[in-house]
Image 1 (cartoon, one colour):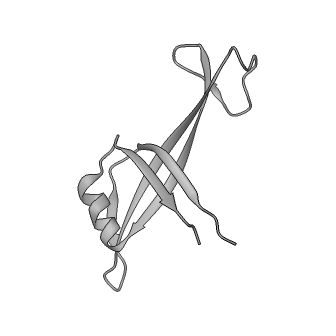
Image 2 (cartoon, rainbow, N blue to C red):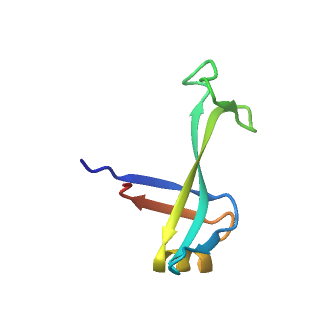
Length: 93
């Protein structure tokens, strides 16, 4: 069975690159996604959601921890920074 994960969100902190014992680069990032629902569509706050800053919507922020390996790890470490918008697609194992 195969699964595909697609995440579109914003990077929450500066990427952290490290190396495994055999010298393979690994970069870890956190990516936040946000769902927004109008209060006109949903009268009461869904569990775990909060009121938006403008008071007109309910919103839910979900954080994902993403690990990038090898050449991708080096590129992410070089070009991605806190606040960057990312599209992540993966087949988790």
